[in-house]
Length: 133
Image 1 (tube, rainbow, N blue to C red):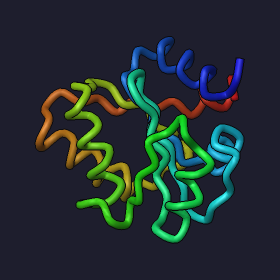
Image 2 (image 1 turned 60 degrees about the horizontal axis):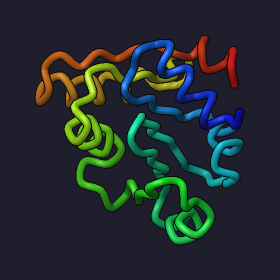
Image 3 (image 1 turned 180 degrees about the horizontal axis):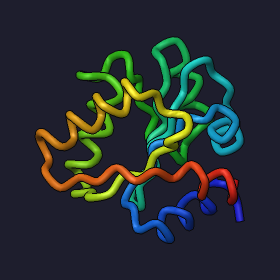
Image 4 (image 1 turned 120 degrees about the horizontal axis):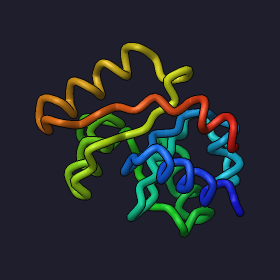
């Protein structure tokens, strides 16, 4: 089972509709890319590879299995992408790496998701991800 399938299995166990990954080594293993800034947003429907503008074209060429998004050009940046994906798929629970995400980013993301989409639950998943990846 490849690492992306393992992550989806972890999501199923935790009953989350999406998981935000920002551990560089995990992202590198899954995407086979190594950029300064890169993130994954994995859903049961579609997978998003978030990269900076300077890496966008290269990431698109190397990752056909992901929807590659330039987070620098996206309205409201990374948190806006997560919000829009949540809206698109009506996701109620989003997993995240609680030992890696900064408190500031977590608070911004939580605020944006909860203000516009009541009932979103942020689910800490660092231990599960670390154990299986």
